[in-house]
Length: 170
Image 1 (cartoon, one colour):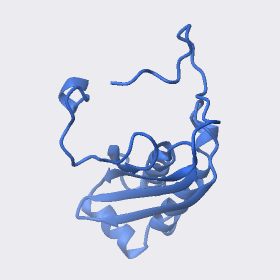
Image 2: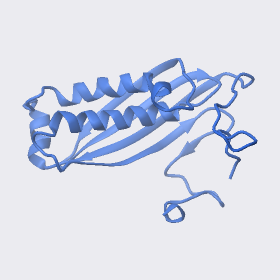
Image 3: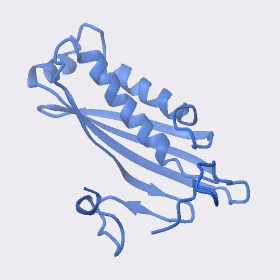
């Protein structure tokens, strides 16, 4: 496992210097799920939620959040985002969120994708909480990233030796 780059030689938090890193094309995909009752899913599908179009609001919230990531996460660099896509799909008992962020620059867009997915999920909760306060937001994670020195990552690929796994992280 690599060193903690956000700590200085005294162990204090710092923003990483990316000034000398080459600009490369970066991409990240994150996902989350909002679990709720089937009747809430049907209200979302029918567009009959009291607050309006749940999926449209959540999509815009996720995009706006990606653009504000550096304001929310203290050590993130402000990035020029080339593209942010937030997709929401419905299954029988959940709203599934997929957020993709793209940029060309010296640092990755994982945090922007994760922020977009989490805020989109929170917006779904906000829009539907009057119908179901027991909604559960789960499975926020990075699904894929590409670009930069660390290369390509996909969640569904085998774990490398020494890489933390869910079991080791408990």
